[in-house]
Every structure is written in structure tokens, then in C-alpha cells.
Image (cartoon, rainbow, N blue to C red; front, side, top):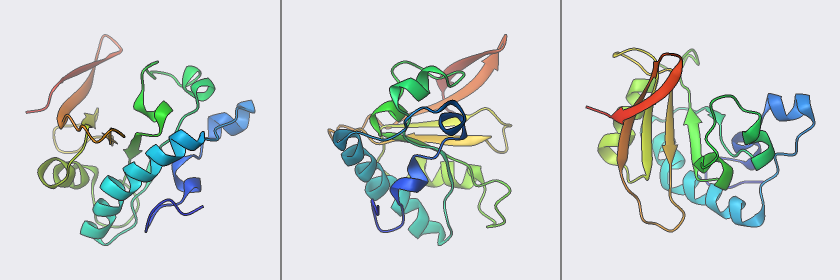
Length: 156
């Protein structure tokens, strides 16, 4: 099912964990609409800007899948279809996670953008969300590990 100009449902719902554990990762009709909003308002724009495929390492997560995903929050926007993790590194496109992060931060409307782990030069992946009501916070955070736990601070 095509969600937007460039993204399909299959690209925003794959999960090796769900497959391995026999967990359904099918979005509800409401979550499907949220995924469409994320794809149209953020993901397609990133794809158009770079002119290269954009890889989603984690998109929609059913509540059951989220519960078995290490480090996932019970209030994760992944569970509503409003968030995706993007990972360009190692894809051979010449586009880095940092380039994607900076483009979204500087040029797009979004609810939340997180520079996930990594180094000062490049995050391990980029988390981005689109709030389905249209009320975007434009919250930009950095996630690091402190004593093995994720800590979120404002991105500078």
C-alpha cells in the first residue's frame, strides 16, 4: 500500500522482532492515517531534498511490539504511527545521518527530532515525529547514555 509519493506501508512497518516472536505489527486505520501524515509532511520532503532513497530502520510499532523492544517508551510516538527512525549510514548514497538531521532541523516542520547516540560528527540514527493534530512542537533533543540509560537533553 502506497502511503505517500515515495513511501509504502511495508517500508514503515517491518520488524524482525515482530516476525521472530509472532507479534502482529499491523496499524489500525487511525495509525495508518498518522503514518501517511508523517510520510507526506516529513519523509517525502527529506527524500525529495536529497534525491536519494531514505531508509526507515523503525517506523510503526504495535503496542505489543513496543513492549518487547528494548529501550522503548510506553508513550512512544512509534505506537501511534507518528514517528520513524532514519538511518542512512552505510547505504552508499553519500547522505549521512547528520545531513538528514540538519536538513530536518533547519528546513522542515516536525514535532520531535532526536539526534540518537553516535558521535558529535554523526548520530547512530535520527528519530523524527509528526504530530497528527498538526500541532508541531519543533522539539530538538540529543539522546546519550548515562550509566547505561538513555538521557535526553536539548540539542545545541
